Amino acid sequence: MQLLIKVVMKTAMSVQIFVCVWILIFLRQSGKDVALPADPSIESVNEFLSAIYIDQTYFVVTTVTTIGYGDIRPNTHWERLYIMFVQFFGIMIFSEYKVAITTFESSKTVESMVAKTRASVQNYLYELSQLRKG
Image (tube, rainbow, N blue to C red; front, side, top):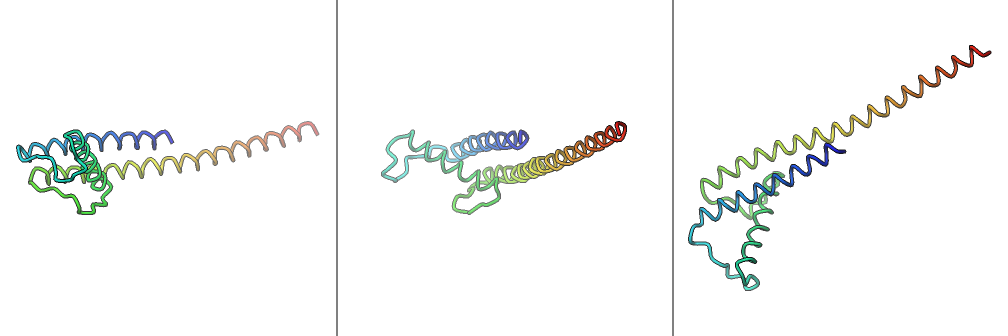
């Protein structure tokens, strides 16, 4: 269970880093063309940046989990190169999840086998002590 928690925390931190780098690439590629969108609900720069953060987090999560709906996509060569790296990292994340879950499941199996063996040995020792008394 502890391994699974570590993998989840590592995934959350990695997604956060990927989002920050993706936003940096987005802002660097956009240059001076970045302006407040026409959406009337967004009134300030902070709301605009929050909207970008939420959109990019959504994009990175759908990319890392290999879902990729296609509603947000990279537009420049740098963005595409970066997303190829993120997709490859997504494969590694799911490999880690598989290892963590398999390890967790096999540890439960090993624990039950140890418990059964311990019970058998204790039963054998009890019967042996009864034979010596009798």
